[in-house]
Length: 160
Figure (cartoon, rainbow, N blue to C red):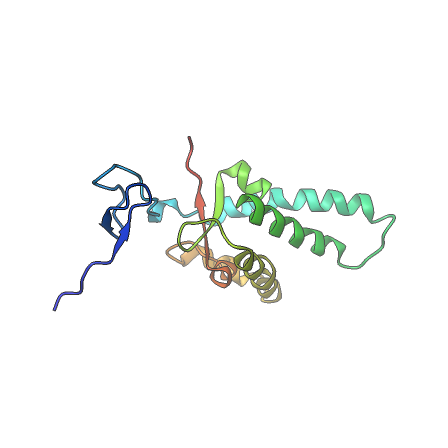
């Protein structure tokens, strides 16, 4: 027997439409379907990471003469990523390069997802000599290990 198609409700009009349909045939609302071309690859993410190192590095340089705490840079870096990703869905580097972090369902990531992604996932990648970042190169949806831990994707933002 054929398996029935999964249907979802349109967020605007409530009409039942097949999952994966890009536009509601009833009201014309964009359903936010993520295409493979929407996923950000390794180079934009590396560029954003380079930009995102600068603010925590500057703050560390300002407070290090007064507070000599080992690991203060890593603490600031993780806090910076977690705060901006939770509040805005993207860090300053991601904003500049037009990419953002989203959850599996296309919604902004939850606090739990951010903690799993930014703390646990990136810590694992750090201790495995950054192999988890290289995973982005051959994974079809351009996800690193930290994206798997947090159930997130990194996509290009839509320009208005």
